Length: 255
Image 1: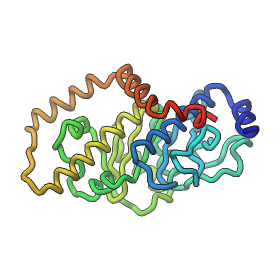
Image 2: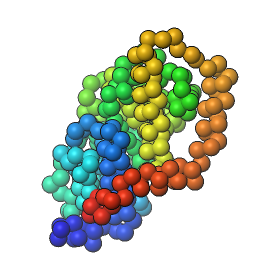
Image 3: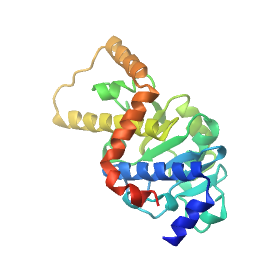
Image 4: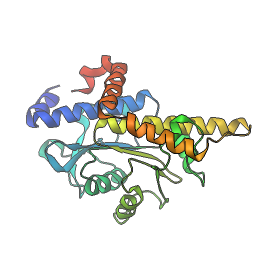
């Protein structure tokens, strides 16, 4: 407990709040069963420090994540601050997240997952299909990145960024899913819809029945409806509602 109190006293108030919010997001991802033991990762840019971001301490389960478990690193993967020295960071997490944080200054949160349904869709040549309302949120604005092996090469960062473009969601072929947002809530909201769309697609395909596809006009119309309705106020309302699911853990994750 002493170490946690000291850490809170060592960092700025805004960084500590970011750590608490990110720890909460890790636990929500665990709540919705979108984890892969200690692998996959979520990052948040440190407020007022554009070249630094927080990421998980490698080896901690998502449903155990605390603000003090997070590690502040720079875009070169260096651990910033004496208080985080000695903590391990997943190199693949650094490569993927540093690429997006560096190239997209408006992006403050990046989530990467290896869910069964996300990976299943990532193996399909046509990717996410316009089968459900959830999937139509991504119609015309979902990126794809070819598999290059475990993301350990710094050279892959340029291709990741180029493939993501100006979108906020991407399927990593043969790998998993990725979402990015201006806020923690926005990244969570995007990933939640993307994951649900993948779940629905795999279930629909497994039924073996002929599938119904909306017309292109309806797909485009629905995508625009989502773009119009997903305001920052709405996304924040969703995020605050989601936090009530783990409200009993707040004292623990913000420590």
